[in-house]
Length: 396
Image (tube, rainbow, N blue to C red; front, side, top):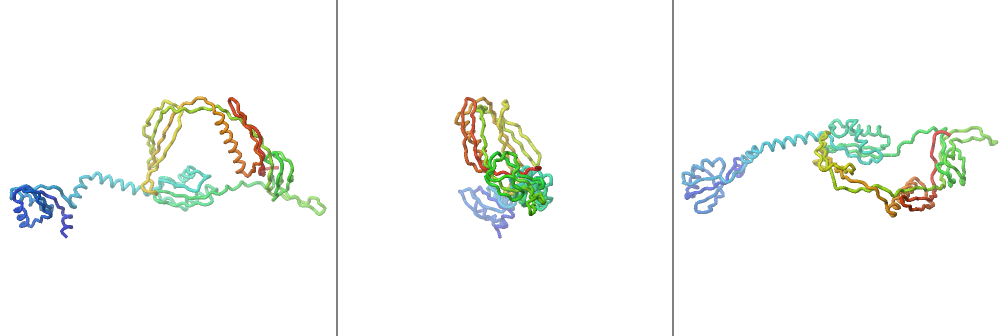
């Protein structure tokens, strides 16, 4: 009980200097002044703890005993409160910061989108801003179900979307499907050849095939017409029914390769000069800080680093810092070595062959030669491949 009392009322660690230490203790006891943890350091010095409210009376008793009383330190609630009021501006600032954090927690400051590949984050966030659901919008005015519906109506390629608010972040998960094909006029639809070559296979689903396996065709030839003839018993055409042309057709074609790659290029020589600039965005307001570095050069490479501030993984603040570093350089004309220009050409040709393979083609033969000259590399030859044909066009 006394321990609680001394913490509430406060107590002090005091030192008494004088010859009459025993008299000091006896008089304090007579006046019901409680001393504890008394320690005698030498013949004239003694320390003890005393309640803060008894200090003045103890000082008078110390004078009566021919000594002095000094306070070494104070403890308890009164000293804590005094210290707090001595730093009132610190606590006022802390209170203001806490109020700002509470206020900012009522808004959305970040949008996290996952599952999108066709629609970019910038496009989606811009649309969210248009429907007042983007960064800076009060959370109370954002209804996740309405956001989901708006996104599905605006972007048909989104097959599934889920929106939810986590902290100060709007989290959107989605899945994208194949874009719906344009409606065709079935009565005029035909399938034409995209290449010169020979028909390797033809699987007809709908329409009338005008070619057979083994036929030679040219680019633009009609392979399948969008119609079916209904015959009489004698073999004459009784009726022609217009349908959509549909077939899987493979054409074996030979594609000539004739390319040149210049060995000349502009080489970058970095000067060592750099310029650093900073930009702060605070709740949509932009604040630029002075640029640091030289700016004499005109050609440069720029790297931009963004940082979003947050208190927790889902509690984002309306502060974004942007750091731009420009590295300056000058150019001079140079030549690729034979190995470098050949590697560039081979990578380019292989990238195109990979694109053909991804489109469903089967590469059968690759006869490509490289011929080096002083200023350029010439690539020639041909590629034989089985290519899927069947571009649907309007008209006959």
